[in-house]
Length: 294
Ligand SMILES: [Zn+2]
Image (cartoon, rainbow, N blue to C red; front, side):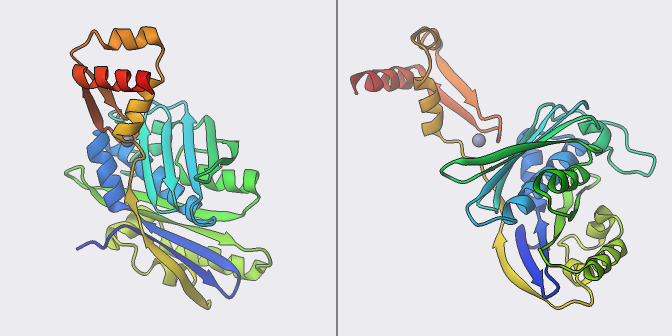
């Protein structure tokens, strides 16, 4: 029995902030919608979890988009988190798979690629706040995000992300955590947290034994005084709609509209979520006529 996906934020008297995300359902939804291979599941699940952690790190209603553009066979990994608890994402080549690493782990680094760029865009519903870039470090996602946070936002962070794919290819566990030092945190407390984190071991192994991430916070902030700030349910959500698809059609050039009207119907698939929209010839005629009248 799994609990719902969620994101929980904690803060300690020692000025350390911890966010923990559980994303099994989100990653499973992505797997089904995009027919992801196991290594693609791991890459996208980690990236979506990372986006939720980064978005939740800021004020409510801020969102974050991540694009991992590496030189590996998956192509780019694209994710968007909204309101710090809704997320969507896709991969250019979702069915590419690779042999496991010698240690039996999915080879996310080779699939994403070790050379390339991570682009991070912070935004609010009204506007884009800023975009910035960092080189990929390993293509393993968590390391790339930590390097980005350190070099571009000057925030020392520890980030750990894991996805466990079951034998039947469903998602057994998905989640991760982000630890950040608030201004004024003492070196000795940071060293203590670092030591605590090493007790967790590989996150995927931890999640295998604790699929809902139970107990993580007690290990990370062991020996410290901490409290829960808030928790939010998290889920997969896309911003596409029939209205948006219609707006795209209306914005086409007259020549392209004419061409579409030759077809019995128009099919458009949202690349973020795989949702297919079908607009019949008659609906298309009505759509263009109504727009013309206005
Ligand atoms: Zn969509």
